[in-house]
Figure 1 (cartoon, helix red, strand yellow):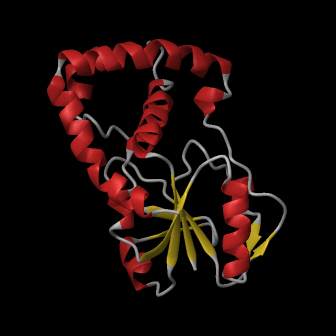
Figure 2: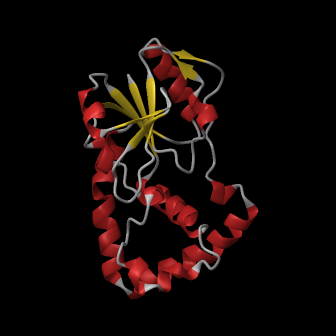
Figure 3: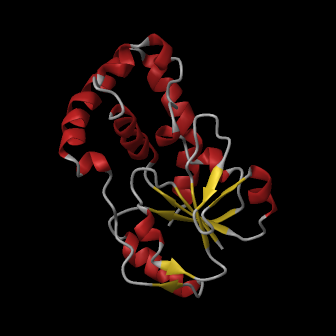
Length: 197
């Protein structure tokens, strides 16, 4: 079994070490904008798309509510700049709505992988993961906590996020094509999220 964790902002590696068994591997989706590689933290090595495709193990994926996850990614992306108003740069905005690995929609990776189980990330994630581990005979050490994204725990990012989100929401109201592009980009994510337990 493989676990796909879209964990660039919410799932530190320490949490992933809580489930261990030879038949289980975690794949952290850590893609650049070019989507050229995936990292397999189970073996601490890079896996090519061909290696991932050749892997016969079924996969499970943890999914956050798609738009919430996108906003979390935008705030993480925004923390790379001294000034949160990066969205005023026309060349950067040509990439909208996917700027880097933080804003990558999970469906882009799910569709390259044999995913059989979809699990919603919510405050009861620990109970869901405990049940999942028992059902699939996986050893789980301790709790599997719900980890808050950095914009909810790091003061300077929280401050930046509180200023950034209303500005971007206003920009989307003034430019409906931005809202439309975002909705189209997240549409498939909602299909998978609605399948999740």
